[in-house]
Amino acid sequence: LRSTYFRLGEILLRHGCNPVQIDNRAQTPLMLALETGNSFVVDFLVNQCKVELTLDVSRDGRTLLHYFAMNSENSALVDILLKLSSID
Image 1 (cartoon, helix red, strand yellow):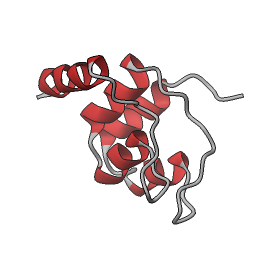
Image 2 (tube, one colour):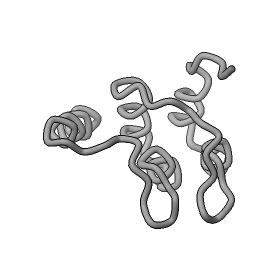
Image 3 (tube, helix red, strand yellow):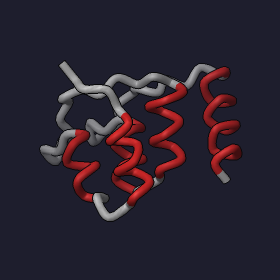
């Protein structure tokens, strides 16, 4: 399943999709992946696309850390967060 998500992500990137584009709710693809608990897409965006972790705030007032916290029971997401280098 992971390889399928990675292939789809690579195809989208090759065709010009922006991995940091915000939607009408001021959410990035990383925020949406975290909100839905999709660890495969989170892994792809963080480790393959090298999406920067920012302090951007969505329209509902949430940051990336809020989205991580909302899915803290998801061990795959926690593992991804723990492997990240610290943010300056």
